[in-house]
Amino acid sequence: MAGKRKLEHFDEMKTFPHVFEPSLEEVFRKDYKQKGKWNSFFDKNLPLVLELGCGKGEYTLGMAKLFPNKNFIGIDIKGARMWRGAKTSLEEGIKNVAFLRTRIEFIESCFANNEVDEIWITFPDPQPKDRQEKKRLTNKLFIDRYKKFLKKEGVIHLKTDSLFFFDYTLEEIKKQNYNLIESTHDLYADGFQMKEPLDQKILNIKTHYEKIFTEKGHKINYLKFHL
Image 1 (cartoon, rainbow, N blue to C red):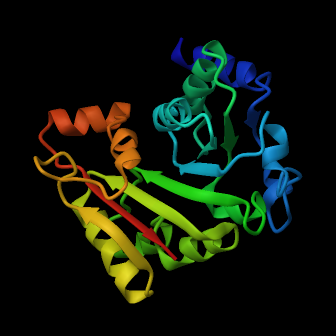
Image 2: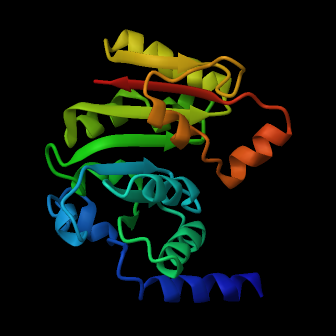
């Protein structure tokens, strides 16, 4: 029954005007047709923000509601999860949000130079084994991909319950001479204040998985940097 429902969701998502699902042939070693044209899809030409590994899209939708003066794209390969966020955004009439179903490895095929203003990486798989390092979304290989489309002063945010992944990213920032703007091992600790007040509103958005982590007593780590 669950498998049938998943297939129905996949079929329904193909009808959503704000969901893009490029085939492997469309992104492997070539530019996707939407590259450089994302803001032409939205009603207004506004700063563009990506959420990598968006899951069910809670963060993408939450940010879109908070910031109608920006456009947001949630990116993930798992369509069964993405369906929920895409469906909700249609039901609620949220116009400044879209979803892109593809692997992050192909992201440079989807966005053009200086097209993106900001990136959010929310609760990614920490890939803790040494042989998995190249799969970590803050590894230099991935950051070099982001450089190809992120604006010069564009920022990258990381929110994670994994202390390992958080510390790994801090080391990468130091090793690669990126500019760390702010960081904390305990985002919701009393007294922690963001340098940008609006960031606090964003950081209070909690995904399904973050709620599970916090209920188990996990501290939430956060950092912000630019390249």
